Image (cartoon, rainbow, N blue to C red; front, side, top):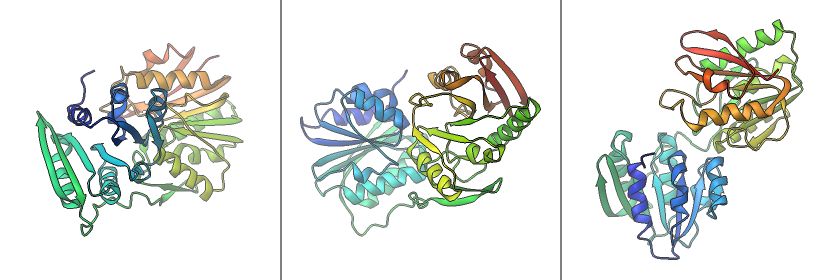
Length: 351
């Protein structure tokens, strides 16, 4: 896999940090593949990450790691001399981390920021310049740009985060209140693929006279599948996600709807114990994600392992994604329940 050029610029700066100096690296999905390289640094490195898979892999490599909803200020200490941020894909999240760095870093510490031209890194560098009094360096590597900053400007207005930390009511679905926030995929919308999955799955269960006892929402996001299926009569609900913001959102919705719900941080459900009669999943196999990647196998493999002997797993994916061939490795039976030419819903089982 070709290394991200923005990450390459940051790594080159990390390698120049004197041995033993304290550094904090914000690690979202862009940093997943370079954790072994981070483990090799001579600096005293800690991670702040909003992804549970990165958190567990970092700990396994001996890297200090904080798993939270991009609360970078919690990982920055008075000893921190350097903070490294590879700009995130979502603007509210990017602004949130930059504000945290500016607010928390001591005056002689350095913020290192990098990203790609197509992601608006030039604009981010200009915005960051308003948050600090000193611009220390700039570099470029093809479409990747880097800047270093120090001495926060206490008079600067923070960047707009769309109230990143605030959980907000985004409406109701099946008489269930839905709370969400920036940092959750599609945080302000009722996902059409998930709606289709709920409609088709409910009909399938009714037509086959199936009443699941326990249910897993695999890759739950803010919980649309859990709360949209509550009226089906299932007794026990479990939800899991890799993203810290999603776990906060679904926990808030569970409280608002008075639903007892087991919420588990896990990498595609890998850490969950037990099996389930019904698994609902709208995985992140969207345009821009390769169907040949490990992510597809992780969701299918873990769903198969968590499925009870007589259980069913229901997936919704974009119609162009050829999930069927991979699914045959993990499930004995599969059936396409509907294909709208935009989305398709599939049922998997091992009986």
